[in-house]
Length: 314
Image 1 (cartoon, helix red, strand yellow):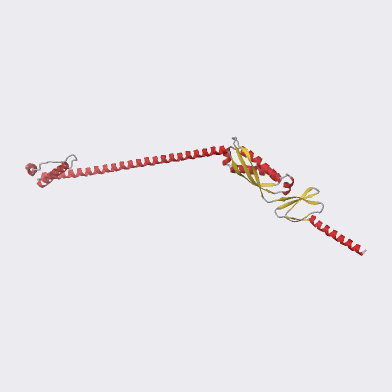
Image 2 (spheres, helix red, strand yellow):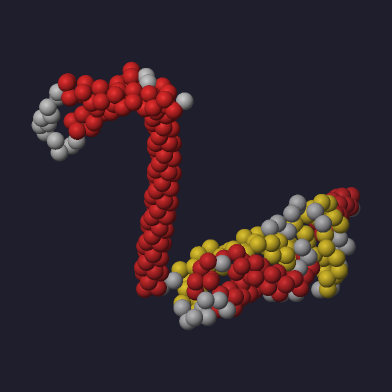
């Protein structure tokens, strides 16, 4: 009897221990950081468990879905897309999303990742298909912005926030790539010719301006030289007039030395001019001193006569 009683107590204690462990297992839950768990009561969603130590009602509540709340990278497979001008390109993309509502992500859509992938592929075809090939290749930022807006709005009921969508690559067919390469080469050559023509034009303009400036300066130099030459001739004429006046006055007063100086100066200048002529190689001039003296004496006689006439008249 005692042995049976001890055995019964042992079994009861064991059952209580097992029940206690099972109760703790079903009641106490530890939710990891960056996760949220949904709780279902008799198959219906009731609440969401946040990270930390949480408690359930045993045999009534159970864990429905374990949702990762971290930002996730979604690789969108490449696909053929036809542009508005009927060109075919291979397009692939990558999307970044984060679940913000665990209950919506668990109960509003089946296979969330597959749904987002198909949604992204569909909108890539729609956005790129509304653009020309050149426009789609040169406006990736515009494509990314449109895709982000459309996909984020469409996935909002699923408790998802799409943070970024990027087109990784757009690959036209080989023949279109070759045609684009030839087009770029022709465009570069055209730009080079335009730059060369612009350079030649600027050089011609600068050369013309330089020639005009040189002609202006040359004309100004000639004008200045003519002015100086005229001034020199004027001064020479003034000097000649003063010399003639002085000689006339000397003749009037009977100054023979002034007359001799004047005649000798003119005679010397005449000989210098004849000798300096460019077509004169040999000059033979009879220099008769007596003739020169005679000329001077004749002039002196005339001067004396004029002087005497003036005295007689006075």
